[in-house]
Image (cartoon, rainbow, N blue to C red; front, top):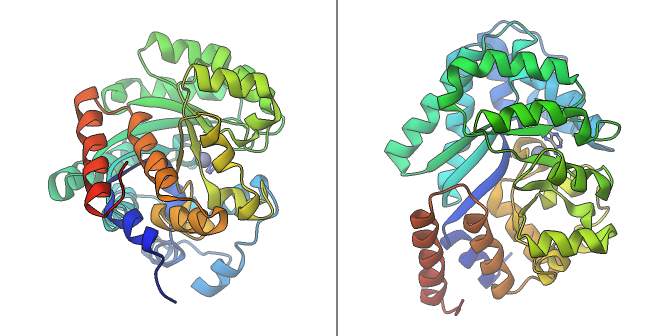
Length: 343
Ligand code: ADE
Ligand code: ZN
C-alpha cells in the first residue's frame, strides 16, 4: 500500500515520548532469549504462542501477562539490553527525548536489587545520549494495587539513588485504587523534590483525575482520556495547561475504546488540552510511537496541523530545560515547513 503523505511528516519530525513503561517494551523474542539466559521456564512454547496470548479484555488482563513477562529480567545486563532495544527503536522513530517509567516493585518483590534495575536502565540511557543524542528522564512508578506502606518501603530503597531518579509516577490496576490512597507517599516525594505524574482516567473515573491533581500534585496526567466525561475538569486541564499523555493503541488493545475511530484525541486537542501521543507498552499493544501516530492519523483522519500540534505538545509537556524545548519546537516548525506544511 502507498504511504500517506503525512506519514512522511510523522517520520521526519523530531519527537518526545513521555509515557513508556520500559517493562512494556519487552518483545517476545527478547522474553525468550532472556528466559533461556536465566534458565527460566516460560508457560509458552514459542514466540508465536506469546503473541497469540496478547488478546486483552481490560487493563487487568494485560497486567497479568506484563508482570509475568517481567520475571525474565534478572541481571543488570538484562535491564540494559531491554532499555537499549527500546532506545534503538526510539532512534528509528526519530525520538530525540524520552521520559521512561520503571516499576521497581515488580523486580524487588522477586529478590532483584534496586541497584541492579536502575544501573542497567541508566547505563543504556547514558549510552543513547552519547551515541544517538537522545536525552532522557527516568520516572519511578509505584504500583497502586499494592499498599501505600509498600510504596514507602520502595521509596526508602530508592533513597541512595535519588540523584538518578527524575520523578515519580503511579501505575498498575486503576479500578478500586484511587490516587487518594497514595496522598502521604506523594507528599513525601514532593518534600524530597521529586516531581509527580500519575495514571488517571484510563479505566478509572474523572474523579481520579481531580484526585491526581489535587492530592498528588500530578504535573501531567497519564492517559486521562475519561476527562471528557466532566466538562469542569476539561476546563481546568485547559486553563492550567496540564498535559495528557495519551496512548491510542493501548486504549484500543485494553478496550478503553472499541474502535480507534471513536478515540477522543481530536476532541482533546480541540478543547485546547496539551495532549500528545505515546506508546505505553509497545511490545504488547502492536506498535511504537510512529505506529501510534500513523494509526491515529488514519483512524481519525488527522490533518497536518493536528499532527504538528501533537508533536509540539510532546516537547511542551516534557521536563526538558526551557532552552531545549525552544530549540526542538523551532526544529519541528522548520522541518514541517521544509516538508511543505506551515506550522
Ligand atoms: N503499567 C503498564 N502499562 C500500564 C497502563 N496502561 N496502565 C496502568 N499501568 C500500567
Ligand atoms: Zn501507562
